[in-house]
Length: 197
Image 1 (cartoon, helix red, strand yellow):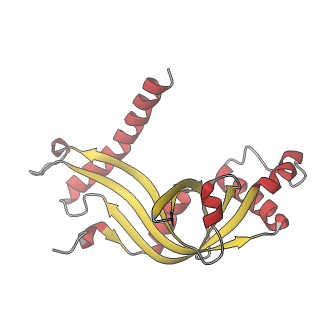
Image 2 (cartoon, one colour; image 1 turned 120 degrees about the vertical axis):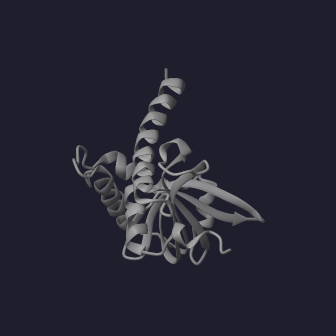
């Protein structure tokens, strides 16, 4: 049997782009001296590329240089699925939305490009209400440009892993969708109530 099952793979790039746009915090994975180096960074999709910024003191920075190969994971919602939500007999499982990408890095050294990219990323992340606008003449922005590196990643490989009970009966698929929404709201609330009391 081929793994993962075909019905849990989504090769539609437009679907994967929607995951990236909706959940832009990426897990960025490089390899240094045979060991994985993992960083979490927001990345913005733009015409087959991912655009990002990184603090110069982050150890990942030295690996985000020209022609370096990199792996990126974007994670959507996920949750445990109890057989109790199904109308048919099933076993417990876990549903999730993931996008795995591979790409090649290009470092961009222009401070003007970095500044504009930070403004553009803020505008994207502030959507749809745009309650905050990062102005080009913001003195704190200019003061921090020397401590941030701009890079882009040309995407060379796409893999969508959407395990959403697609192999179940239509009513069970709808029940799993509702559970994904319910469980995430409840778990976030419970986590915040426990950790941030």
